[in-house]
Amino acid sequence: MFSINNIQNKKPYYLFSIPLLYRYFIKLVIYIFLFILGLIVSFPFLWMFTTSFKTLEEATTTSLGIFPSHWQWENWLRVFQLAPFGKYFFNSFLVAGIITIAVCLNSILAGYVFARLKFPGKSILFAIIMATMMVPFESVLIPNFILISKLGWYNTYPGLIAPWCANAFSILLLRQAFMTLPEDYYESAQIDGCGHFSFLLYLSVPFVKPALITVALFTFLNSYNSLLWPLIITADEAKRVVQVGLTVFSGDAGIRVNLLMTASTIVALPTILIYLIAQRYFFQESIRVGLKG
Image 1 (cartoon, rainbow, N blue to C red):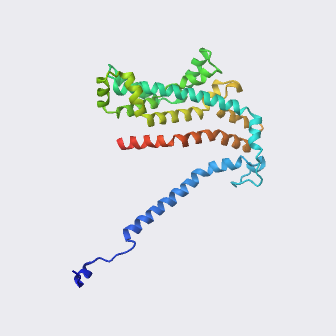
Image 2: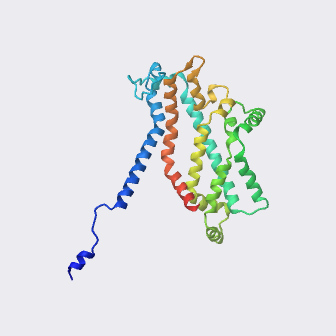
Image 3: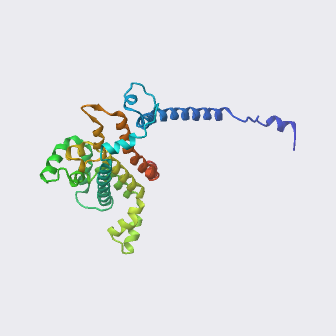
């Protein structure tokens, strides 16, 4: 029933309450901060891309001007004329692809063993493998070089590939992924006559697909971006990779900055493309691990 008391008891209605305005203000500040941070992070990449279209004189000035006065489109053709980047790309994709396949296979088998099987010394062996993550790359550089040289693999594809076919971090990541698989799944599969290998192949690997793609992504990018090891283990252009090929544009006469930035942009394009394709699985794995933790 309508009365004056009902009107007096009603609270006043505001289109925007103070707490709501405060939340909008905080979100606005966060978005502005992230936008500015994104500009700061992306500026070097934008400068690299636009410098690839500059002349040498314009690229070597102290000014941080972004856009060139005259776009030198021929720089992209000159890079392939001055260095066999087609061969470099072939070597990089071949080496990185084989290393990625080897690391994924080793990590799947080792990760499953440490997650599911029980055997004497399992914890000690796993601790030893994990301890290798604390060994700096530089400390094993010379022993690896001596071993590869004595095997006769200097300046060969096996020399570029063999030392990096196993990775302790990848084993750890897949072991943690396999451990999230419920034990009831294996017990049900065992009742149906499924052994460890069939269970691994048909159930476990599809279950840890996001983690496996994350391992493949990290391994490929680390191998593709490797510079020091390919630099010391190769002696001619026939076996060099793209990262070593970038050194063509720096020498005693100086650095050809415009061509170096052009080559750097070309070299970076495959990694950006691969990350954009695989980022969905990478984020899935990050969220899954975060929720579990």
